[in-house]
Image 1 (tube, rainbow, N blue to C red):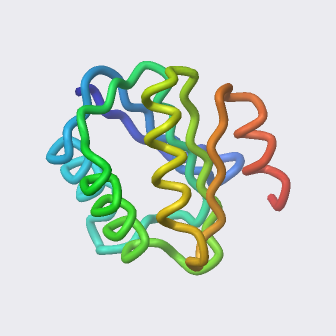
Image 2 (tube, rainbow, N blue to C red; image 1 turned 60 degrees about the horizontal axis):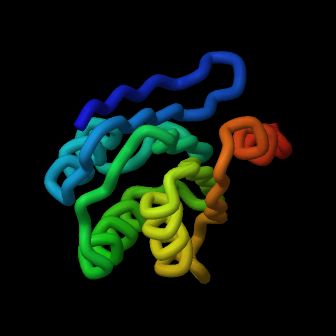
Length: 122
């Protein structure tokens, strides 16, 4: 898996791009890289997974949801993007596991509406 992240200086949004085959250990390593202090550096994040093929179970999606919730800032907005049906479906599972938490999460099939949604409150 390829993973790159950066904070957009204009918007303050953390952009995370994942490509290739993704396993649970890949995602947890990326999560540790993004949260060296135990918390995400920004409250708004974009996960660009348009070229990512997950190799995770539903139980592993739940584990990732639990781990990211623990590291979120209150009031976070998280947009996740994938047009690949399998990836999109797993992202929707993640979204479901995170319902009722301190963060607002939406899954999109294309990048533009995801960015527009994240920038609404900026």
